[in-house]
Image (cartoon, rainbow, N blue to C red; front, side):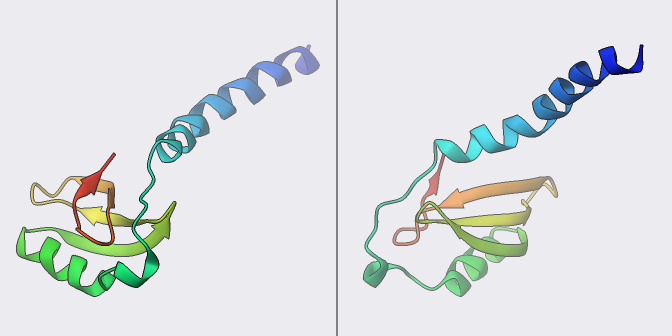
Length: 88
């Protein structure tokens, strides 16, 4: 009986992880690296807007920001490294 349940549990665990993976697939930025502004500047701008930035990474040519927005809501947001416009 236990063996019959394993495929179902495996499928459910994939569904729990998949939405995060899909969210990253749509987002990309095309600015040449030479035109990027420093991520520290983005962090300063977001802080002025009331954000708390925990971490900034580069993903698909964008700055990926992890933290909390001005409403103290946990966010994972993508920004163009040249313009700092939010993408995705």
